[in-house]
Length: 55
Image (cartoon, rainbow, N blue to C red; front, side):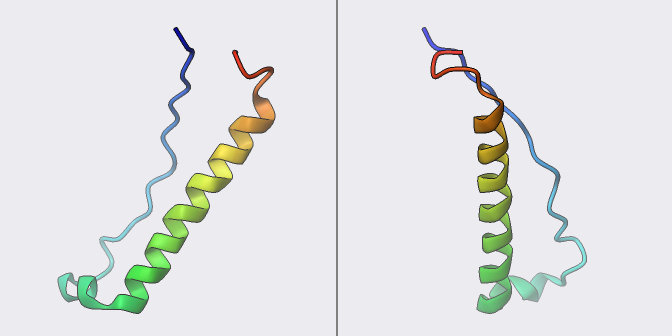
C-alpha cells in the first residue's frame, strides 16, 4: 500500500477564446506550456512539503 496525494490546481480559463482559436498552433503551444508550468510548480511545492518518501 502507498499513500497518494491528489491536488487540483487553479483552473486555467479558456472561455475568452473563440472556438477557432483551437486551430492556432502558437496559442495552443502557449496554453500547454502554461499548464505544464502550473503542474510542475505544484509538484515542486508538494515535494517540499513531503516529510519522507513513504509519507
